Length: 284
Ligand SMILES: [Zn+2]
Image 1 (cartoon, rainbow, N blue to C red):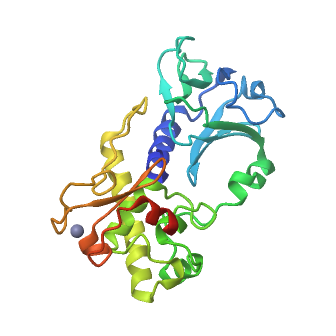
Image 2 (image 1 turned 135 degrees about the vertical axis):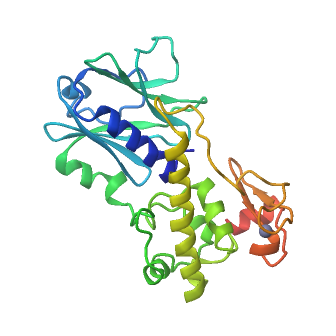
């Protein structure tokens, strides 16, 4: 599940490798991946790549001549750069961008769902696109200050949900929210409008520290072509049943339909263990 740190390292690696490279041809084997038709995908052919960057959890490939490919990896997508061209039998391929020097930028998606998408947009249309225009402030590199954070989160929704709302703050998803709340020693079920100044300051530091740490880790270990499975340095998320790395008590989990939320009851919920699915659904 690529979130801000995973998308950031992808953008950095691709930017360094592709800036200035010329696109030879493009192909969209994933029937549903391309969400726009004007300008057409082939408008990118013959142009130079001006850079690759991240906005929220999205990747943007800037192409000379004021065009942009906006990419959302969703749950299981990867944007990878290979030295050789893909076999057409590779069923994970959603979009192929062939570079004149023989390399190939590939949007691949693992699993059964086809959810990752690409839009080809002109300059003004990128900022105006619904996916970008609705984003809240970036969680990184400059996490919102505690006062701003309190204002952003001032809603009657649990932190675990509101921090993942891209319209509130951009970049955090299901994995890193567990790490951030554990780092801040805050209950995932605490309401956003129930944060005091100290808690907002703790939370702000946790957002900054956790995302910084993840990106530094990826800087050391992630190389092109960008691995299918990113080595996420998670301490709590998906570590249910294991000892908390800080206090040693058992990490607990709440299971939702398609994901799991993990926390340390000792340090985050006053010792309270919430395991019941029906109860957790009410708190969602
Ligand atoms: Zn603990």
